Length: 238
Image (tube, rainbow, N blue to C red; front, side):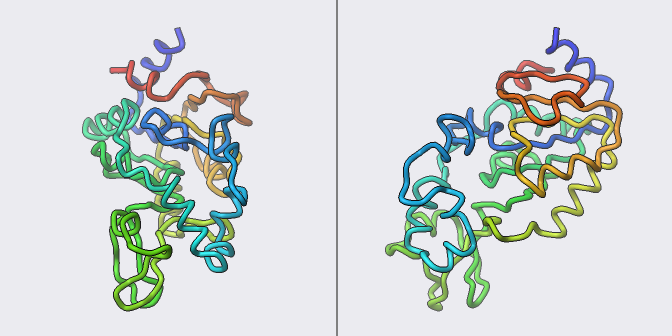
């Protein structure tokens, strides 16, 4: 019945926005952070939130890139049914934007174009000295513990680390589509990471749907809640 109710909402909506987190990509083989089998429950010399901080990147770049190359560069991952369905809705003109906390680029790989990457992307990397751009493959394959530009400068992934702020233009774009949406689908996120989770307050549309394996702080405010995998739910829709 919940799937049928969601299908009816999709069919009756003209301006859908999708707000997604790590749970959108787990079915593509990318681990999330906070579930029992996620990165926060794996053992390293430092917790992931420490390693993925601006201070750690500056002070211990070798350890940062050891973790980053091992856990943050899923270059073999492919879009799953959730990514593909969202791209299909965009082509049909029903979906006006994807707001994502993910950095894996799978929405674009599936064909989505109106994507607001709140936390950046592993597919953009730049030299901190001269600004030259580099591919994620360059980071992965660099012969040395710290990826360097030919000019000698250190390369930084264009991802938002802890202690860093979100990009103003990306946030503005996300707010713009959230304000326009008549249906907001929130999926694969615990809604505990701020300021990203706070963007939901800009939604003024008719219906709010939550798809997530576990309960979230906004479950009681939603018109429809499905505690299920995102790919299974979206892949079942037409």
